[in-house]
Length: 489
Image (cartoon, rainbow, N blue to C red; front, side):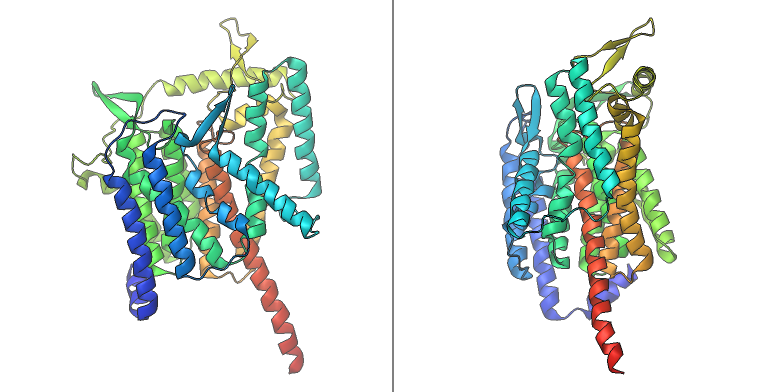
């Protein structure tokens, strides 16, 4: 905090005015959303006027930011990419096509992917690919897609289940390709991130306006579990936990003092709102992500991080009783653990019967006679890795983990070997810690294929990868300019 105050003193009047305008925009959008009259949730599918107003306000803020900071972009795709963090979790913008549920976010990612592909073809950049994935991994990904489809066809898996799983695992990663192509500067990346922070601030401040069907029995009293803009409580908790991790990382590592203060506000609000969801999986993911952040943070800041983590918990009793965000959950014991053990037993039996996988969309029930019977709905084992292994086998799980290992390795190598600017380092560390927290939460419920939370995982991944790509590019530029200077002496 002392560093923040010192940095504020060094700002000139122009920068201070710009920062004040940015803070005013953030506060106005968040406050306007918080003061909107309480309305009943529109359910899983439909459109809420409140969410439309929120998106309109954020779009106006983005426009002001573009003009204020003179962010130049000749790509309309980049402007579309800015809408991604605003649409994550917007359950009021989903649509059922038959039994397949899609969303505005999925339509946007598909449109951005096709637009990027057309642009690359027009520029004859046909060999562009993700810088982190080797050809064998790409081949195995396509092989698993074909194998899973073939197995699903042979086993007669319902088509809607196949489509839901495939689009969940194969559509969202294209967000990485789009972001790596169109994000070409630090300012572009900063706006991409700031819009996500503002959206999270809005979600946290307005969480009390949306109570769900689910309640928890604590000490003989029924307590509402709050779900905000998400239709499912746990997924909303995962979203808030990951944003709290990102906000904390930016607070400790970003060089701009005012952005650090904004990030701290987001972290505090998101932790408070997350606790109101009563999601155990979100709490576990938050602890895991904060632990990863601690390992990626060195020196005195690691101690400060521990102190902040304690304050985020200890501040709860200081919040007045009438504030909806106050955490009042005193027991984490419920029947969900026994259900997850049942799903685990069912999945293990399916893996033993189908070691190569039962096909995309396949799911089973385990009878009292310890036999498997096919289920007609979506795979719902409350464990993404169990789900994936049942569908495409241990090989599929290995390929998936190998892909993510290559992504982390690409970012980690930049952190270890390059003189990375503090701004980019903050984005890389925050993205790594937040995605790790989401991965841990994925062992307790679904993230990877859901239309209301899968985008959050890949948005976080695009942040750390774009930051690493910019770091590699800046290092290469410095090397190319240093060589001519060296030859002159």
